[in-house]
Image 1: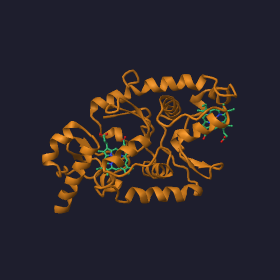
Image 2: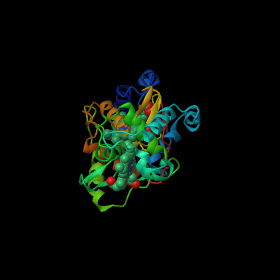
Image 3: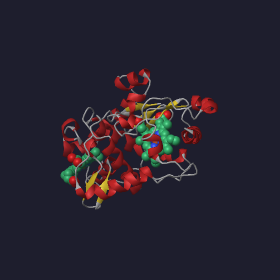
Image 4: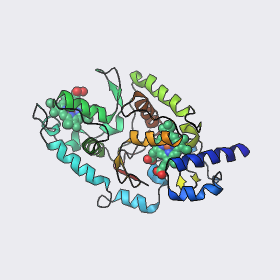
Length: 275
Ligand code: HEC
Ligand code: HEC
């Protein structure tokens, strides 16, 4: 009991550092008191959206109200626009994204023979942009990059996350699991301490989500923008006062592989909405 209270106090500091919510900070005084609900990790995998307020869930469900759909619309325009020295568009090779891109986001990251490693959806798109369109790289987290990724991921909406059973991914996935369980940062907390042991529990003003990937890229109210899974992971790392991995770092891909294995079967919801 005592240990849990101590962990709770540390978590509360982390939440404040995460900038989770003003309410979380207000509640710092009585932090350390998780409610008694069983941690979500003990029940079937569920999307992060299941732990949001009904208002936010409604916003996510309604395409007219979901701000992420603005990025998806931009992504659709990019899909059709000829680019690079090839002067070809994504559509010139892939046709209608509704067919050709359906299911892609549900199974990535996947093994890439050229890179001899796992690549995520952004890198997959970049490889077509650079090698097939013969165009300049786009920086991670740029508006265009997020828009095109959101458009492609949106084509898998409703499909269950289905991590490939590819032995070439096993080592990276295992590295991801270890990273998830390893204590990091000045607060000396692991991802698992929040997202496995206390998922679904309220702490201060926030609910700790199960850390699944189904909504990404997501529109986050706190960001007032769409952001990638890697941005979210970096936020959690700064929250525990650890040095976040750079965008595109192998560690972030490894973590994504582990997160997807945990979330197998959860339906893709891109673009998700988050507080
Ligand atoms: C101190 C507790 C804590 C730790 C440690 C922590 N997180 Fe989080 N994480 C949170 C909270 C709280 C949120 C949700 C914040 C919000 O939306 O207001 C979150 C959100 C997330 C999400 C987004 C889930 C969704 O539904 O959109 C992912 C993915 C995630 N964390 C992964 C990680 C990983 C990987 C690590 C370890 C590197 C980690 N977290 C460490 C508390 C934590
Ligand atoms: C010149 C033709 C060409 C263009 C232009 C092109 N691609 Fe591709 N793309 C391919 C081919 C061929 C493959 C499959 C073979 C491979 O792995 O490279 C592929 C594979 C993909 C995949 C992986 C699909 C899967 O099933 O895993 C994605 C995602 C993708 N492309 C997205 C895009 C996007 C987004 C654009 C526009 C920015 C684009 N592509 C432009 C030819 C192209």
